[in-house]
Image (cartoon, rainbow, N blue to C red; front, side, top):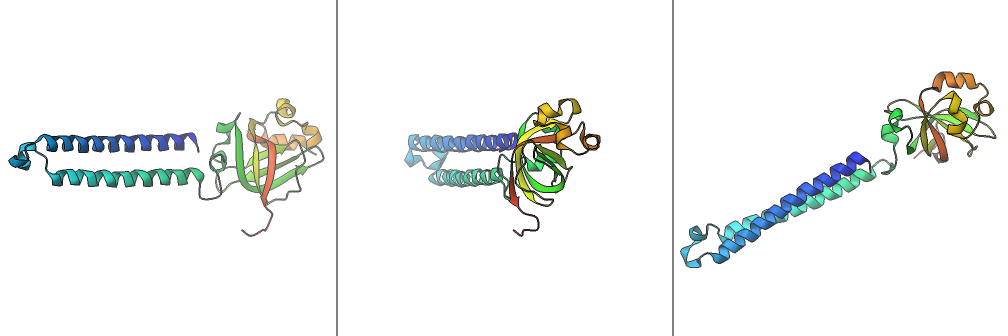
Length: 208
């Protein structure tokens, strides 16, 4: 679950909990007033009737049901309904990859372009349904991949710099790219993923 989602869940539960507690206290208080009042004086003497107590108890029971439904709904939202789990950053990273620089992420998306695959590593670009594609560089050559394969990548987001490329990605740019200058002309200064693991989820052209 993302931080905002976690905060939303906690806040909703706290508010619902406070409301339930307040109603419970009201029920107990009314019950005490009813017990202390003179039965023979009728409902006006104590100010609370048995019908009033029953109505508040019914409201409290209804609130408990709504709290349970709210908690179930938030739990479903945190897991996602599209195969993306709570630790998957796919939805956000294509919108603002720079915001993730220095963080470890897990991204599931389609390979939009294979850049290179060699004995020392590989590089490709992933694209989401919206936002901008992001480059992925791996210091090890993964299983054979093709454009339009759907993959899950876990790694650290770094800002591409020629001077620190080998340190950031674990492989020398001249060894990885046939034309490193061309790659840097497109990617230098942008965010890319230094991949620790790459898993193919769906092959090119494979139906769900």
